[in-house]
Amino acid sequence: MANKSNPGDNRTRSSVSIFIVVGLCCFFYILGAWQKSGFGKGDSIALEITKQTDCSVSPNLSFDTKHGGEAGAAIDESDSNPKVFDPCDADYTDYTPCQDQKRAMTFPRENMNYRERHCPPQEEKLHCLIPAPKGYVTPFPWPKSRDYVPFANAPYKSLTVEKAVQNWIQYEGNVFRFPGGGTQFPQGADKYIDQLASVIPIKNGTVRTALDTGCGVASWGAYLLKRNVIAMSFAPRDSHEAQVQFALERGVPAVIGVLGTIKVPYPSRAFDMAHCSRCLIPWGANDGMYMMEVDRVLRPGGYWVLSGPPINWKVNYKAWQRPMEELQEEQRKIEEVAKQLCWEKQSEKGEIAIWRKRVNADSCPGRGDSYSTCEARNPDDAWYKKMETCVTPYPEVNSPDEVAGGELKPFPERLNAVPPRISSGSVPGISVESYLEDNKLWKKHVKAYKKVNPILDTGRYRNILDMNAGLGSFAAAIESSKLWVMNVMPTIAEKDTLGVIFQRGLIGIYHDWCEAFSTYPRTYDLIHANGVFSLYKNKRHSFRDGPYFATRRSSHIPR
Ligand SMILES: *[C@@H]1O[C@H](CO)[C@@H](O)[C@H](O)[C@H]1NC(C)=O
Ligand SMILES: *[C@@H]1O[C@H](CO)[C@@H](O)[C@H](O)[C@H]1NC(C)=O
Image (cartoon, rainbow, N blue to C red; front, side):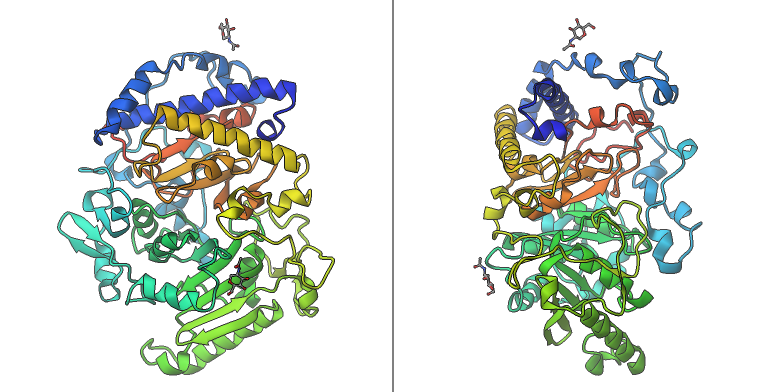
């Protein structure tokens, strides 16, 4: 990432060009893989590109020939022939290595620990290609995909039965239909969002990034998109099969995740809004630990929405078939923690309660008095870090009205404005100039990408992954209502700039590419890899061990 941000440096300049070559090669590889899928007109372009693209420079870039020592021992360097992988057993079509049901069951159920990431040890990693399910077809283009998913792509009917009355999902012959309902919004997500928008400034671009905890099939996130709000939705891989898989098949950003014992993989002050609608997270439990984690990732001035139990228990306790006292106590505890966190209750109407995190510490001198302050020196450091019952301090301010950590411009201005994390100099080594330079550079690259692939922004590529997102400039340059980008910040990246990415109104996640990503196979239409191999080249990891690449819409996987 240093390479992306210090383009003035001579030595890095040459490596920048190498990285771009690698990036382009990956890009074309995916195009090439996809051209076999037979999706219509664009395929001839892809075919042509694949023919024209000479990726033979790649042997020079192969890290096998460069790295030595310990890391080398793990890899058979004499093997210069490309390795051919066999397909995995058909049972593995939806295999998620780090969220595998069998392995999960060997971990404690307490605090959902068993639903958290538990990756296979080296000797249990599979070395085969995940096959597509029988009859797999190209998903519908957005926005039709929001409402329809081909049955063959995720053939799980259990939700249609379990959630039948709640209007989540219906099975109609060879497709699933998503009417946009949810447990808490049987009338549809749009009406529900209207209710939220009467309290939360969703319309004018103030709220752009959202976190949906326990998202179901992510209808909330799906319907926020047309209001220019992008939600990172997560739900565990649980007994309701394929919730997150449905979300991704629909073309809605989502990952497998859970609030358990470790921190969620996002930096502090990332989201403008967090949301739980009947998400079954015990907010009051563990002394409010989960609310404190939401507080960590919520930006100063951000909103927290809780709908469903226990809100409005007086009216609903019978319908929910739960004891009145229990619900009352649950809400009491939540209110108490919210008060401790100094969140301001904005509204409670029907079953929807909304709080707002204050803009700085000065506006709430008593915040967290009865809890400890988190000692972690870096509140962004979340990867496999234990969640704690403590309050994350605000960045300091100089005046009572100042927004801690800096005020953000409304979206879309925010996308290219200088993020406060950079203007304040809080990311060492990245200046305003290098940010602007990086932004300009990626505008140029994306323009070039679009020249070689004119259908890049036509809806053909919906789910896009940037494996090494840097400052998020690729995502900013390619930004469009037809696609979304999951910006990944490798945990070994020299500079952690995921906080910057969120300040630009983009979403992303921390990840270590030596392990499987928290998603299903066939999630992404396009994977962008810039400098990833270089980043990992001297690490104890071989991409050959990489469990799988989560591309979708391609039938290059042998069956
Ligand atoms: C790539 O390797 C070949 C020989 O293996 C060499 O002639 C060429 O200069 C190398 N290219 C670069 C860019 O290093
Ligand atoms: C957006 O609306 C909110 C609430 O009405 C208001 O406080 C805020 O100043 C507005 N922001 C902009 C940029 O107009």
